[in-house]
Length: 234
Image (cartoon, rainbow, N blue to C red; front, side, top):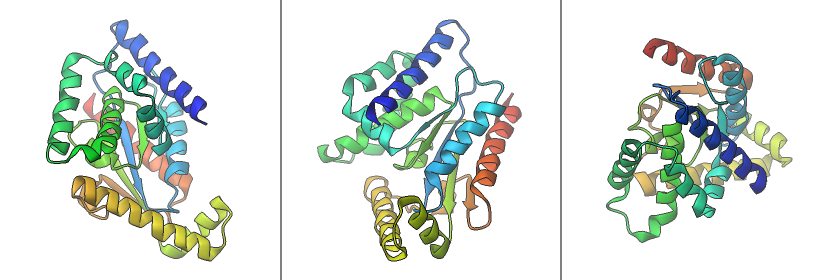
């Protein structure tokens, strides 16, 4: 899993470096962040959004790519990869990232180093664009960047228990316990690190209830919103 993730990361960055080096840098670098309740389809919908945009975003010079919490953890563990990102970005972009990071973390002690590194990685990926980032407070971290679409996926507990039990092969009770634990962990992560409430609707551009909208329909809705924003700014 780690090797595959690293290869995808390298391929993604190399594609953007190649096009930027040829003087083909895009003026718009759209990205999507997905925050989700457990069992509301975050990663599944994220993958579907990537596939939809790969098919319909004719202006993208490099393929849309999904980064979930695994890629973020992987990149942070491989420090030399984090450093490589800087060479693909103009100095102005790097300064903007540093400014945002300092604003977010200037009051936090060194114990927040991993959260800080994770946030810096997400910021740099968002600056490159054509990414879907799932979780880790990406919507808050990248709120200061333009061209982003921030999505929240929600659903009723009963439906989410059913989805979670099927996805992880759990009993209903086990699924309910996992949902309770994971949702509380995400709520605490955002509160402790960014002083934000994950349920605040104003943190998002689009809130989708997957009780009533299929995963495929949600992916299309998100993809069309991204394409609409790109067309509006062009």
